[in-house]
Image 1 (tube, rainbow, N blue to C red):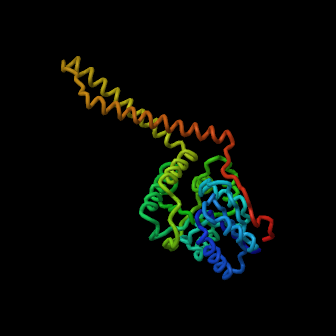
Image 2 (cartoon, one colour):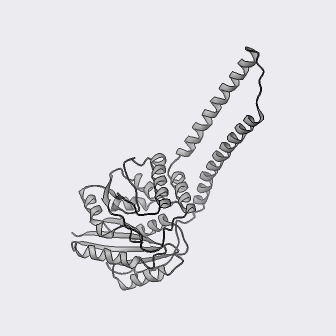
Image 3 (cartoon, one colour):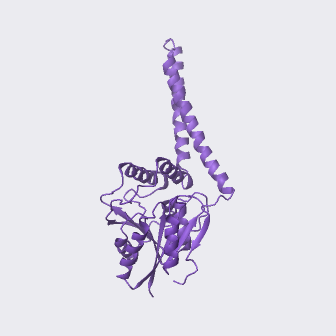
Length: 314
């Protein structure tokens, strides 16, 4: 029985690049005729002509499905929508800008066939901007500390997973999907494979500072209570330090007879620091409560406005 491969590609401002990615997929798959495949393209509310381009691809090609969101929901929501439409034994997710080399997809697929449940592409030399690389490094650190990602596992947007992993991921109906969190809670049988990373030929990354910050926040509030534990630990430390200082002050006054004086600047520094920490912790708790409230109101992960090619026989 032929192995069926599904490709999922979130699309945003990719009207000039997505056709090249599809062509590259077609070329590499034509050299491996024992594998059947499909491509699911998801337009994440792109303001340019991306939807028209991928809609035409969905009409013209028998193995392409094009999905159009009603607005921008983010890359992880786009991936969830694409995953829900796949039928493949192995599902491969990659970018729409050509920086993730589709012609090296069998480096990932071969690792899956060796027995791994998930395989992430790892790059020796990333060709992103300095800012994007910094954001990726921070995301790696956050995933390791907050959700238990193995330190030696590199996570990227180019990865392959088995069917059962996808089925388990699609059971998540919360308002804030976080892909690596869903993978990690499903399996630990994960590895990396080295691939090249290309220069961006057109445009620039769609990840602004605000989107990166939202991604980090989503990662550690949707799949971890570690921030709350850190807050509890920090509060305990400050309480103990305050108690010790209080005992020290009493001893200094009663036993040593020394005058207890506290400078205005020192007092204000302590008050501002403790006040800031309290506001931070309260805000963090509020973030958890707010996300729970939004999820209870069934806020959708995404809303599909149009779909092209979903009724075709593969």
